[in-house]
Picture 1 (spheres, rainbow, N blue to C red):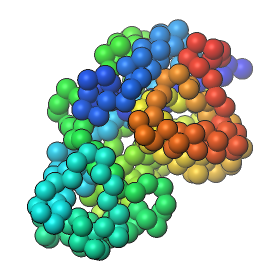
Picture 2: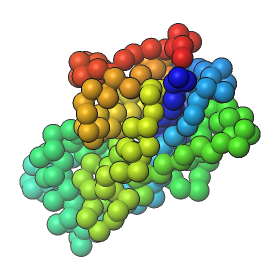
Picture 3: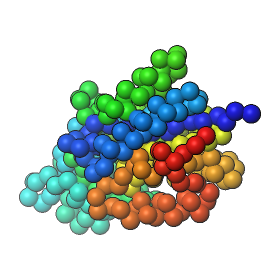
Picture 4: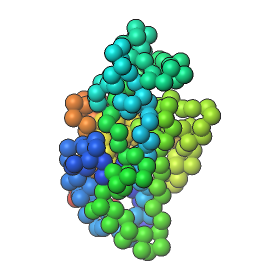
Length: 265
């Protein structure tokens, strides 16, 4: 019986490529390799899912949202904790957002995955940086010419929560279904025999997505469907340990690791 093969590409976007607003070193070459593999496996890929970071300029993880005691916005890569907000080191720039912002950083501390990190505004909806990196985008178009449709999954448009994982926001908003568990994506992935996973960044959005997929697979033995393509994903500089932790944890649960040129169906 023919193996049902899916590709899950996490945030393969221009703003994460060389010269982008939040460039991840290695991302451009990652996507070139992924494009080459997609072309090689063109007739064997049953489904392709592409997640897209889709932000507004105003966002809780962008500098504009916060001010310090002197009224200055934080620099990119500033980490803001619940203790910082409680002590008055950082506050919401708009006073009416303060209570919600404080509750948010407290919720992040409780879930224990990431503290709030401020990023350069990136993948802004309607800008060139939101687009798919061209080399990979061309490979996707070639695949679609056989009357297939790439499943594009947007995330990150809610300004009050981070959305690293394509499966759900870090702190889901009960009033916004787009931040809650993406049951449809999970169910679709479950129909695959193997799921090739690549994209940016391995320390954040890819790691969070894969962890959440695994946590929501009904049978943990199905985690072995996941194949991480290690040469088509790179970490945010300074967060390499998050990638190491992700690989250690997920391979222990059954995730396999390969490369774009070594993977064979």
